[in-house]
Image 1: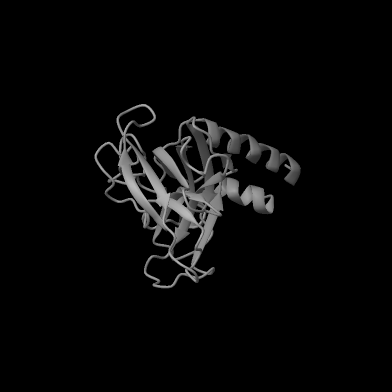
Image 2: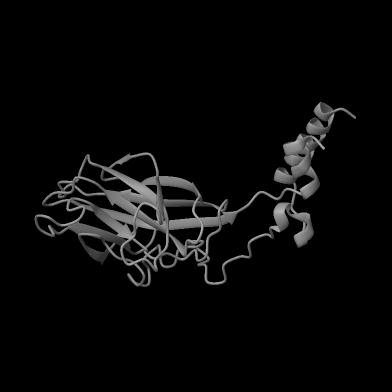
Length: 228
């Protein structure tokens, strides 16, 4: 059988591997000896890998960079949501005009290169906020929290498309593939740039799913990469 036919067969099996239920593969079935990632035991039923992202039980695990974080009522579909209001840290402060709602260090420990995570969150502002019409982004960040002064070499961030703040709830979504080795966690946050006096926004119903890794038996991996 020629290499072209082998690659076609491999592609068919690859599609089946993606769309059919995956079996409990042993280590020898995985390319390079990789094994499937286990489910995270401490994940929330409603927020996936995000703990407390509906803010119904409080603000534990959440913070705001350069902001006053509050739990307010009502929420998007339930009783509570989170609101942050920019507090000027003063001239010379790092990223002075950035405002976030963040679950740093996160609830996705020990990510591996190639793992894929997806996060969603709902955002809005109100008529009293000077942030009305400004743009926020949802971000997923892989990082090494053991580093006291993270640099570009031990953190990597992916942002969603921008969401223009209105008084209506809007959903943001972002997907990230882990690209760095030795990372300790993945956090999710909403970020407003160019924050100024009177800027505030709300966030609710954070959700994060993962890790996802494509199951590819070693024989198919060989067919796709070498033709045999």
